[in-house]
Image (cartoon, rainbow, N blue to C red):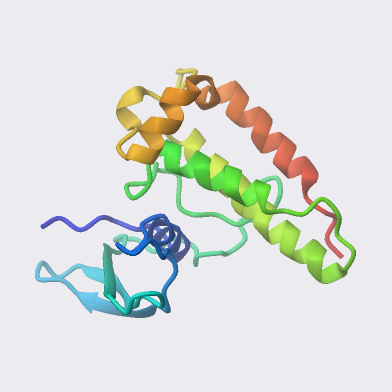
Length: 190
């Protein structure tokens, strides 16, 4: 069995969040461990019981041969927002572009319009940075010189459904415009 590769723990956690238990519960208290695979490579194993039904949940992801910046680390030079990231320059092997766009939309929708406290502003910033990073992941699927994400990149039901409903959302120019809008919504730091 070929294990899916996870570039960062943030990517692995999002993948698990998008794959709920059979009972429908998405979250579970995850214990993690680094394990050696039979071929000598390393993997991260996340396991724990579903809080709703008690069913055991487990996900194992092959780790990259070369370490990426720690999950959630800031990339000062790579993102204009100084933002959070999910992986290196290559497209994700775990999530397809539709799942990344779905996640970006969900993050952006969860940001409240007003931020009465510093803490609320910090939470809004962290959430919007995740939305921007998810859009960056979608853009990685647009081949050099192309204007849109190819249909062959969509491997999940959620991703294919989102593309089928609005294929124009996967054009490079629209993705960049939405990314710029989310970046512009980032509250000032400090």
